[in-house]
Amino acid sequence: MSKSLKVAAFLCAVMMVLASCGGKTGQKQTARTGSDTEADKTLKLMFPQMIEREGSTIKGGTFVYGFVYDTPWKGVFNTFLYQDNPTYEVMRPRIGKFMTDGPNHEIKDSYCVMTFDREAKTATYHINEKLTWSDGVPVTAEDIIFVYECVGHPDYTGVRYDSDYENVVGMVEYHKGEAKTISGVKKIDDKTVEVTFKNFFPGILWGAGITYDAEPYHYLKDIPLTEMASHDRVRKTPLSCGPFVINSMVEGDILEYVPNPYWYGRKIAIDKLIIKRIAPTSAAAAIKAGEVDAVQFKADLYDQFVELDDEGKTVFDENGKPKMKVDNIDIVGNIENTYTYIGFKFGTWNKEKEMCEMFPDGGKFKDKALRQAIGYAMDNDGINAIYYHGLRVTANSFITPYHPGFYDVSRKGYSYDPDKAKQLLDKAGYKDVDGDGYRETPDGKPLKINFMFMSGSDVSAPIANYYIQNWKDVGLNVALNDGRLIEFNAFYDKLQDDDPTVEMYSAAWGVGSNPEPTGLYGKVAQFNLERWVNDKNEELLAKITSGDAFDEAFRAQAYRDWDENILEEAPAIPTAYRMKLYAVNKRTKSWDQQFVTDWDWCDLALISEKPAVNMMK
Image (cartoon, rainbow, N blue to C red):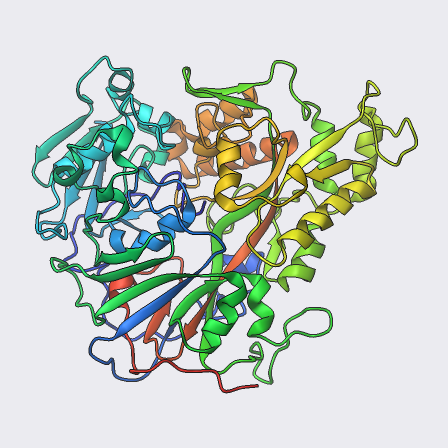
């Protein structure tokens, strides 16, 4: 769920409202590698983070973006109701950049400017005077307040109501039905909203308790909240205040965007933007044939475009660049704001109390030694080399390189050490009592672990089986849930619904711009899918969110202490950081994946009427 299920957004504010999409200067940029970034501490960037090609931009044309996925997106085109990352990714042209982030992923001016007053405990939205919905109605304060009132409403069943929103004055009373409005959310004028917090902590500067998108109050206000996610105004005809608006669709498979006629920013060069879903098995052929102008692809397609040696490693040419097998694309890449992990189920979500509750007996993974042993038994380095050609590295922390100010490259994490895994299990009393090759529990009972793994690519099954063999090598009996891989939507439905068959699972988090982890691992966070509750964890999270954490040194140490504790307790095991890669057709004028950029969908442009087609054999 990457920016899909995004926990919080952005930081601080500048005082100027830009009159264009992101405030781009228009100066020509050259392709950059990642050699000067913090990312190099963990992952060598073999490709440029952005490209801008020579050549005059043609007038109009249709840009086709391929979305590689094996199942349709759910299509809940609303920023407080969607739950799946595919939907978020394909609706980004509709959203645009309501807020952007600065060098440390802090809130920066864009369509909306934020100002903060620590003494008054307030954050104030200043909406651009020119920002307008695609039906011609201006974006106003009501559109911000509407988001707060929907997320906080007693009927809200989404996943974004959490402790950060509860920190807004009056939110808890409103959520309980004890108040008709949220007292801490006030309209100052048509373009200004002031939000008052109970506790003003550093995470607010990154967007904790702040909505980073607006939704059209005038268009949705008459729809009951319980019906909104299925309503045509959300599913088929959503409004947009970004550069593009949906013109037509084939549900779950194709979106046809056209420029928002009321877009106030940089002039859009293309006539249409089509986003179409491409099955992973068809993606390479579509890219080579020029059927798409840009596509994000996974490492399992890498060998279709880049030469590999017998060990699966990238072959470089005489200039030190990856040797390409196709000539109609360039590859652009950067580290994702994502980490993959193995999670353990400890309990369930109590809907009435709105908090995680652990199983009374602690559950199958109550023993920390078992969890740690599972982590040390995993050969993530092998998986990264064999199946991902070095485009992933073993994660050493729950904080990613995407947040260089908080990430600790020296952290050891869980490296492959099967001997240590065996020692931990032996000492904790997990031994093979009956001689079948698998360990029993300390009280002599059979130990079999259900492992839920997601489908989605050709390497999904081999990786799942590789892990299962790793665990078998240290005497643990692990098998796939129902003996099969689980499709994306069903996978997360099972996790969020606390399906009792789910015991251990492999998933990924898109961490958003806010590094603050309460929204993923706090006891009142619905995103805490492990349902893990730990007193020391709560204490350390409280330090991160305390007033003391405005001090940079204190804040950095608080993050280190939290990370050290959660790695020790191992309610989950971080497994990999990964590279996001895009194949970009050579008729595309520019494509930018730098961490900090003002490039947006409104900058899409073509330099040729026809797409480039691969001519190499």
